[in-house]
Every structure is written in C-alpha cells, then in structure tokens.
Length: 189
Image: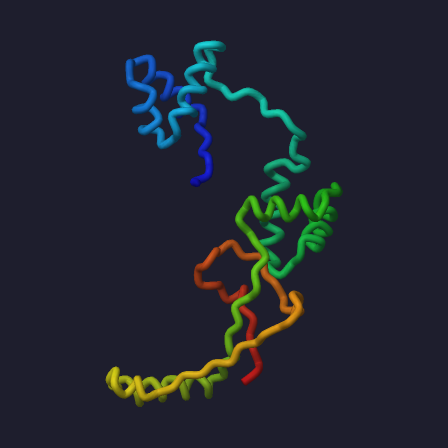
C-alpha cells in the first residue's frame, strides 16, 4: 500500500473549486492522485465550516524546530561515522538544549539517513593499479568460451553474534553506489 499523501492548501482549494464547477468527486480524486475518501472528507469539511485549512492535529508537539532538525542533519552528514550519542553531544554544545538519542535517531530516519555498514574496498597501490591495467590489456580480446574456462572464487566473512565491531556510517543512499567517505579500505588479502 503506498504511503498516504497529504494535500497542500493549494490542492485543497483547487479540489473544492473543481467540485463547485461540477467536476465529480471521483474525477477530482483522479486528477490529484488521491483516494476518493480524501476528497469526500474535504468537501464535507468545506460545506460544514466553509474553510479548506486542516484542523490542528492533536498530540504532543515536536521537541525540535525545523531549524534544529536541519542542524541534526548537517551534523550527521559532516561526520558520517558519528553515532546518535555523538550527534546529541555536538548539538548540546551548539544549542545548549538537551534531547534524547531516540529523538536524534527519529529525525535522522525522517531525513532518510540510516545506519549502514561501509562498503569495503581493497587498498590499491600504484603497483596494484598497473597490474590490473596489464591484466585487462592481456585479456581484452578473450572470447566468452575462454572466459568460461576461468573459475572465480571469493572469500566471505561470517560471524555468529550480531555485533562484529565493524564501523557504521550514516548514509541515505538506499542501494546506490557508496561515496568515498562511506567506504572502508581493507588491508587484507
């Protein structure tokens, strides 16, 4: 099920105007890419109150302001390997206010910044690069048949417990290619 989309004030006004011009509710919903129940509730609220603004939402207000949220995001992006406790400490020094680590994590998730393991890449010296280029030049004209005779092998690391003491980085890429600051250079093999 796709996430629910909120209509902004302009779209709510447009929906009411279309409805008053005689456009059916189902067509209004299709044009705005929302369900018909959203439009039905909007029209009911407009006929009862004469306004399209949303009511104030119940619940506890946020502890942080949008400006403070941007500070949290900036601190996380400046130091990608910083944990929520480090970001909390840096924020407390900068703003002299105190919030919980869970609030920090919630704001980072809101910005789609999640803790991820760094991509591991081998350490390449100039000699390694030269050897790779030489290998490519030697095998550039190999056919599919010749490559089928080659057996590739790889090493994998397995752990029995959850924490293997590898560093984690804050990264909002999802599945895209990691940037150089989110990679960990491997010295083995």
